[in-house]
Each structure stands twice: as structure tokens, then as C-alpha cells.
Image 1 (cartoon, rainbow, N blue to C red):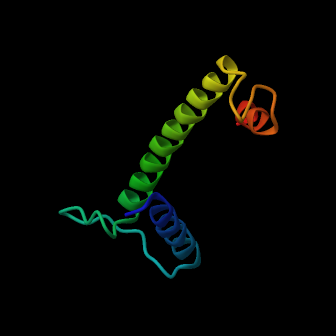
Image 2: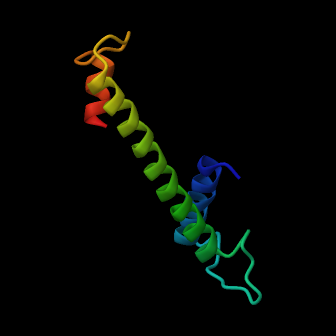
Length: 86
């Protein structure tokens, strides 16, 4: 499942629990698709992993732009500043 889909499902579960539409439950054996604790945990872990990956990619691009002033997206450009701010 895509991380955005996981986060939307987790958000729906939180909303459902807060309105009483969904009951908090923990199954034995665990139901990874429907147990609220597992759905929320997996969504958060996957989101954290994706954020770390994206930060690494941004850092790599930023480092490249810092060392190569001859690129089309040169050091000091608007895009470069956006990388710095990210």
C-alpha cells in the first residue's frame, strides 16, 4: 500500500474512533489490516522511513548544488534556496 493511502486509512481510523464509528480492538492473532493499533503504527513507521529517505535525497541534491555552480539549477538559485530551507 502507498504511504499516502496508509496515512489516509490511519486518519480515517482516528476519526472513526473519536466519533464512535470504529471501536478500538486488538485481535488474536493480530489483524494487520484492521487492528487500529497496527494500522496506526505501520502508517507512522512507514511515514517516518519515507521522511528520512526524502531528507537524504534533499541533502544529496543540496550538497551537489553547493559543489557545482555550473548547473542549470545553480548555487544561490530559488530552487537551491528551497532545498536549503527543506
